[in-house]
Image 1 (cartoon, rainbow over the protein chains, first blue to last red):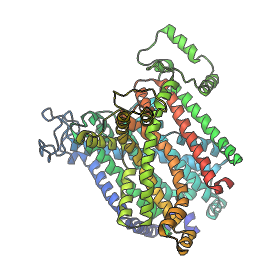
Image 2 (image 1 turned 135 degrees about the vertical axis):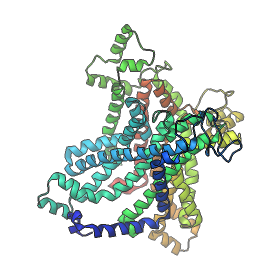
Image 3 (image 1 turned 45 degrees about the horizontal axis):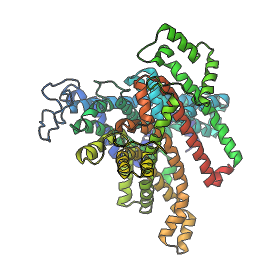
Image 4 (image 1 turned 60 degrees about the horizontal axis):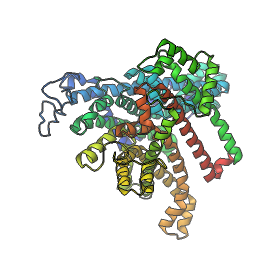
Length: 303
Length: 335
């Protein structure tokens, strides 16, 4: 990495960025699992975006003549409801498609919140050090001292059950990982010559933090962001399952599982499909995360 | 070594204080009046309200309230549960062994499968076994364990009818706890059928709770082993003509296990979070289910104390792991 491009990365222009992307894609696409993960993830995004077009029924419409109808290929199933119906006669397939919206929304909102909070706190702690650093990092240590789901549970108890509060709680619980990462990166970068040069050139604190140092910590942040995305989906589903996340009749996958629990030994499909959807989504994102780590971490790349 | 230990303890102190502040603040952050919140759904009469306010010390300045809270907690006084009407610490002591038993078996399951699988994958790097194992490990790591538990119930309890769906032991068995572990107590009393009942109740929850640690341990063992296998001393050992089994089993494994031990220690938090879900699914009478039930019963004294006690346990175990790590690895001590 040459230092001149680090000082003014924006001035480098598009050609450089394009080769940057090509290098990235080269290393990313070596990982077959990552490409499959990306493909599945794109399908999920499309399913979420076009849920109203793809879903045969509205997610909350009840057919009183078809309670717990099995999937089409089972005895008693019909092509009217491809993946069967739930206990109040709602189409499973439609609810699953709409559920993709919630899971992706949860991941996006939580990561955005956690990322914003973590970057701000990490930058402040790593840049200013001293008591600011001590105060911020002690609080981060404290949050990490609690098992994450327990802390999220307790926060939701305070805030009240619901999808939005669950997202807030999960963002708060995941945020210290970002703060730690940014702080460590800032401390490593701060004494480097390009930062000193920018400082001598007259850059202020804000510019130094955001324009000079932050872009050089992006790699690990993206990887952590991906892992947090899948974590957020899992934890939100867990909260929904415990009855403290999204509330029925929201077609959120964890919440669907919670209401399916009592039919577990009678209707396997109402339990199997929502969980499978969660697993596939989380797995796809984790595969992407592995690929991103290989592609973005120069240390691993050379070995 | 003593200096290292003292140093660690000093570092943990701010977190310890922070945990007590969080637990103290929890009841006060609940929406509405803390006394009404703690009284639960039934509410209280005005006289009883004043009495409770006095009793909980809500008329004192906040710092004094905190000081009293810490003093009470330090002497084991966590208040009385509103739903069970018993001291919180008594309920905790009754339920905690169930969680430890479950976690212990989950961890044994994870280690017994994870460590050998990781070693084998590293030795046969790139083979179908290695690729298959890493793929499976990633699936395990991505698993929503509350769903995994339901699937196992459908198959093993519903379809095959091998295992019971919930609880710790058959209702017909009752004995005074000695260790609090049903599997050990039943053996101590020499009741084989009780032991079998306890074990059949334990198998599925332990597998569910151990799944994520299993995935993590297998991955960690494999990568630690790969690193060690490329070291000079391993090559030297091979060059000396030692058998492959000896090189891997003795020379490499001993050093590869150091990071694995740390990983195992760090799983305690994961186990506690997992216990909340696993115990809820299998109606396992441990502290995870106790916490969830108490949230729904609005028994906030229990939630507050559970939060404090679980965080303290996780912190203590992490401290012990840190110290053990320094005992095994002298290089850590020096730094």
